[in-house]
Image (tube, rainbow, N blue to C red; front, side, top):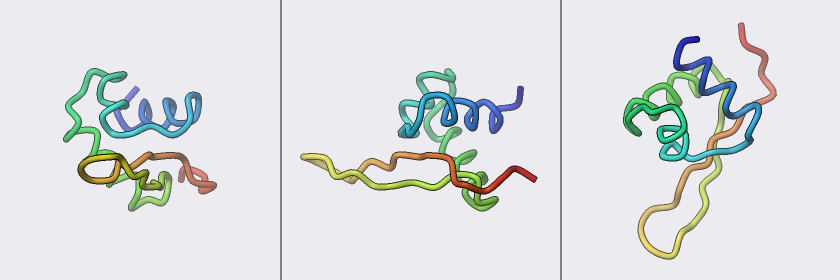
Amino acid sequence: MKTPELILLQLKTLGPHSAKMLAERLDITPMGIRQHLQSLERRELVCYEEARTKVGRPTRYWSLTQQRPR
């Protein structure tokens, strides 16, 4: 399976994840995961919600959209 397919499978089976969590599960750098997530977002296959943390930037939790893959 290609990386985007693995990301979609993880989100489908395990629900919303941060880029860092996906990177750890798939043994890929967080930056690599973010690039794939941005590509999937442009194709309207994933979306994110931001969750505030005590310190620093909000964390983006990515999930699948209702859009079907083309």
